[in-house]
Length: 181
Image (cartoon, rainbow, N blue to C red; front, side, top):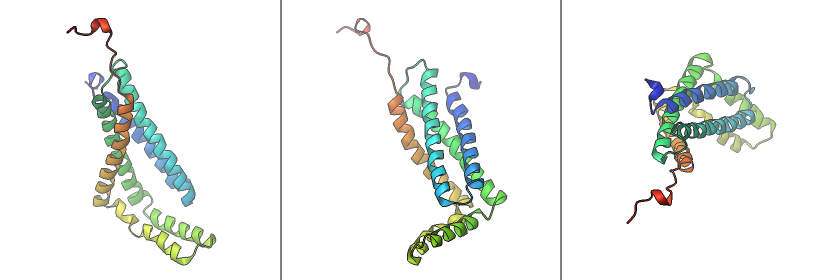
């Protein structure tokens, strides 16, 4: 009975956005030659694409309702899409970083260290940069996944609220339809 459901748009676009996110993550992990600059740029582009998909979710929900919708109704669909998308993100990362390429963080750390040394960065700054890799493997453990999921949902929801407030649209009341005092 999903065709008549008020959740249809959120579920549909959540799945689509999740698949898009998985493809973008796979590209980031497999085809950037572990260059932190490429990974960073692709991460920013990927997140912008995901945010646009959340915006499209809100637009489609408003369209489904005939062009008029309250903020709450639009946000509900966006929030469902966020929950599904971030679940896809977590599951993909867990599978990829735990089973497909468990040495990814170590390879990225080594490549980053080489890049910093080639750039003649002072050792104290290199040491500071390398601290970020110390706990990277924690991201694939259950507690790290749960924390990451929660924080991602909160951050995405802030954008979702912004999009919902921009997309809300109430029907205009014509003076002749307005109640008379």
